[in-house]
Image (cartoon, rainbow over all chains, first blue to last red):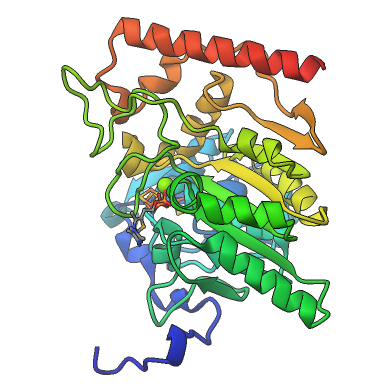
Length: 91
Length: 299
Ligand SMILES: Cc1ncc(C[n+]2csc(CCOP(=O)(O)OP(=O)(O)O)c2C)c(N)n1
Ligand code: SF4
Ligand code: SF4
Ligand SMILES: [Mg+2]
């Protein structure tokens, strides 16, 4: 704890600074999106508790730096476009 | 999808950063993420002690992209009252003050602070994220734990069959306090939730939104099933979606055909000990509650 600066009132001045903590390393299963099957319904985007699914110019992308591998996106996808794959097999 | 930008049914901007420590599949973290989309950037948030406070603000980090304050477990509503009055004194009338508090922090220890806040009529959006127990400290029962749910302080045995008291109906108590906008919601119905929080934000005075938030480790189901479990709560009538605007009650979702409560119960470890008779008793309680609500809706 030697490096930590303790502010009066424990004030934290950097909004969104949990980004320093890459929760992607928690993951056991990786959600892999098949763009061919995706119909753009945005359910995965709506339901990810970690905000890891972002819209792009032509679909969605998954942020593996933070995705915890909960599997919600895969479960809610109506076209089974997201498959959960064992992390070491996904590399 | 070929080459077009998807149309989003809810706002795109994320005001809760990733990297927070909520469990994989946490319904409460999803609740906060969705509600912030409805509240918008110009919001000051107060949070009571609990999972959301602990997981989003491990010092010296914060997941919040809006100003945020935590003081204690029992006083989120009192702190919010002070923030709201300070903004008023400064003449800043375009800032929303919102509370995120757990069920323990709302229906038990924070209840008198909440009662005082709404009695004084503070212009605050109070959101109770209800995971139906004291999760942060290891799944102890709260006043919002439903009947028969096993928790670490209401274990299921021969005499005690899990929680043996009814779920405290704080939304109804808020209606009886004369709160101008009261609503129930569930994270499995995000558009309904966002609509209600937007309404709550517009109210000049207190507004109360009570959101059912499934919790994988506390309820005992796989992290991928959070949305399904919430849907089953609503489709079985174990959780009812409604709003009360200036005393006027309205069901905002009516299941086409209510599913048997067993379909919800059997999916969760906290209800695994239930006998057929006990499941039937829960079914009767839900049927009675539904009948009562139907009558209210007809008025
Ligand atoms: C006065 C006081 N008593 C007890 C605690 C310990 N404590 C911290 S969080 C918590 C439970 C919070 O439960 P809830 O409000 O339901 O939020 P959850 O953790 O479930 O999200 C308890 C008992 C405390 N911080 N302060
Ligand atoms: S697996 Fe969970 S955390 Fe990862 S992108 Fe899907 S919903 Fe989000
Ligand atoms: S214990 Fe439950 S409420 Fe708490 S962070 Fe984990 S999933 Fe969320
Ligand atoms: Mg709780």
